[in-house]
Image 1 (cartoon, chains in turn orange, blue):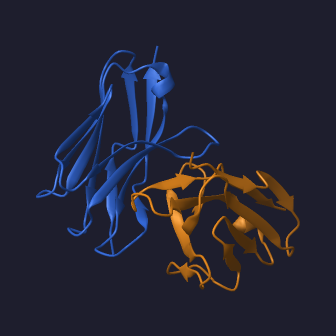
Image 2 (tube, one colour; image 1 turned 90 degrees about the vertical axis):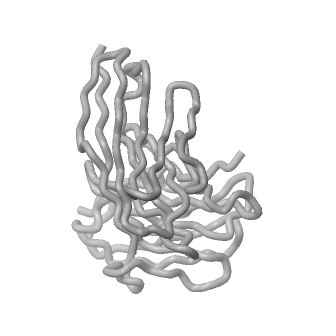
Length: 117
Length: 113
């Protein structure tokens, strides 16, 4: 149980385009999902916390108008990178907290590698 | 906010030896400390965790110790195997009401056959 999927796994796009990444909890309800960015050989940096039915909470330095997060249901959160530029190229990983389970647990998706040309 | 430091950044051990990775945290209100293993290009996987009311926890070859007074916790891997080679991240759950994990910078462990 507690499987998190992400789609797509890889995406290559041209500079200026927008890219949407989906994060789904497959066999549980996730009241909270987290979006991280990971640069090569670096740690996971939290971008935002997404609660179902409310606005996402962004970390300092993360532009909310550039990284649009929507958490429309208890099983789906989306991250849209708007007007992507090469510096946005990174590994984006979501994680989800299991509803009604030990509040500490987070389960990670497989990640999406974004390359902006 | 919480700040997590991790040492060493890289660690090489011979197969069968033990490996120890240490982390320190800054927020005394943090009360949950997971350890994740991440293989290249894959998702982080939880390998062990510890809550602040426990000083030590073991799971087969893996153990974690926590010193709340000193605000540090360590991962111990015994009888290392080549498949233990990966990047290991420690994390701390921030604050009294925080949901977020703050991750350490990671340790690249190489187990040499």
